Length: 423
Image 1 (cartoon, rainbow, N blue to C red):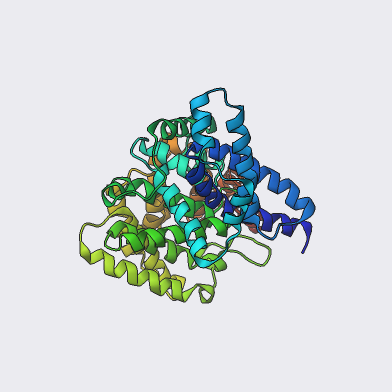
Image 2 (cartoon, one colour):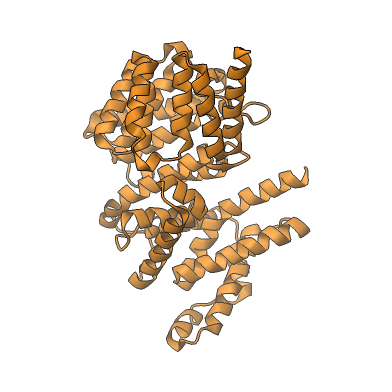
């Protein structure tokens, strides 16, 4: 294994362990902000020391011990006696902490996973506004950077940093207990929780930056958490719809990249590589959910994904049905990405000129200003409309705006292909 491969493996391990460790530290020390700071310091220390000395036999225990020591030091340095005493009373010795963390039987693993689930609902507490709750959860549970979260929300990074900081302060001031919410509280927080899981999955399925197209650790964690909540609330239609959407989308993951990690678009993928078990499970979920009552956005998106996945060949894709589903989805959601996908579906049914006409309306949407996907879709439709020169310009513009290396390479390849064809 090369050093670069070891670094990637370590990064993924740290990302997987971070919410579990944070859950343990919050449960023990009852201070969200201080716990997150301590865990971040432990992660930084691990990234440095593990690269030099190798990953310890009990990486979770190592992180918990280091984070516990950091927060203990913080408590000891506090000038406020009440806060210092209230925290120190609950401290276990480092040896006790290490023994607790090193216990790796199934019951202990379930406790760590439960901590992550509690942390998820805690971050989505009603004391926070919905945008703040979602941002904080993406940071604490999803492990996304502030820049990545800002991009998902289509806001400046500085704005998102302030939002996350205020959310931490609100959690601290509210005195939220670290425990699973009651059924009534779960219902209140569920909308925010589902949105968070959706965004974590999307970042994992198509990373907003970096050299890899996928961040499987994120998408897998989103699916795991969604399954866990679905087990608690099996009759919630939107929750079932979200789980179906994740399964139906993730089923295509292996086929999305080539041998060199290059992006392969949906219409060029080898459908024999799609995960049939995940498709069957997702189709069964959404088929059982849709007839039960009111239909929500996640169920509609899952239905769209099912139409794609059930087409044995790209030519068999039922685009009129997809267009109808996107039309319904637009009536429920003021999301520019939904409008963008609606324009694509319109182009597939009524021709590229119709799709390009819809894109003109999105040019005025400030949320898409400078976003690479608008340029990428326009380039694709211009190419289909027989205007390769304009398509090249927009492929290049899109490539200049994305921070994902695989997407950038794909877009530049499309531009080069069209230029070569014109020679």
